[in-house]
Image (tube, rainbow, N blue to C red):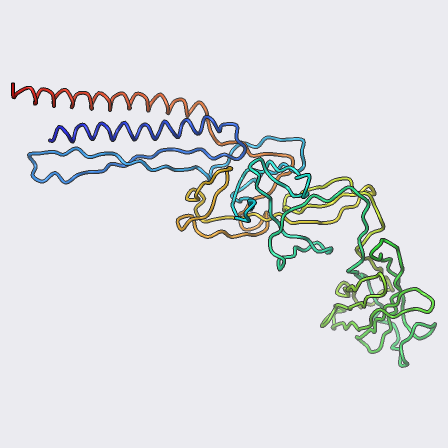
Length: 402
């Protein structure tokens, strides 16, 4: 065995324990960092070729740094609705000032006073999907910064309406030309809608049975004279359920934008007439704040108790979270080892849920870290003794010349 090899082996052991103590130091200093994931040092032996059995060359130890990203930390409740914690395996998608995309579990978001965007303590902007008035996310628009709605008075124009209920199967077929005067239609209902400034207006819906299983549907603005906004038909099968096209398109009229009317909830059964209409949109109202639900939907709330969807916060997943590459600001980027990033809706595909008014704490156990530090200190001292002993043996060898 080479005495120089003994020295190198001792140094290797000390370096390995230095790395381990460094991870302990980083963990302890980030024990209160929101969403921080503890780092650990793992060791593996490096063996050298010993040639014949009469000589032994001591090897070394290699250090691999691991982050326990997949291990969740405890959740602490807060008083801010924009503080978000993930219960599950997902990550928030955030961007920096250079539009670089990152993943993070740090959900301590606050509103940027200049842009209205949600940003966490690291300065990263939370990304999400804008929502259509019907509550579906605008996936084609891609990820955009999540903004908090303002508290100023707002109005929402009607873009979608729905007819629900039953059209009597016993109604006689009208053989003339459907119209809007008495005797030229079979049934009538009304729907209250709103224009772009929140002015309420009424749409009259005239329904005429033109065949045994087909009804003509015409929609008019209640004005003088009435203005037709759209016309179509709805067909029922042998069980009284709608079949074929069930959507009627309304043309824009002045400050009232184009809209759609869903007819899919209608039935034609041997019962009385019972059709009602509803539409989205609202009169002017004051905003009071936001509510973020478990599926990541950000709702604007209003003084009248209503709410409307504004954004959908998605969650991202990777196949091996512990292989993500950490970056400054408590964020991560994907690597070949972690697998590609997959983005989807919270509560689906094992991504977990989003809890508003809560933060995920660091998963560092300070008592365990201090125990690791003591153990590393002892092993470091033992390795230093190996180095010192090898050095003394080398001095003895050198003194043989005297």
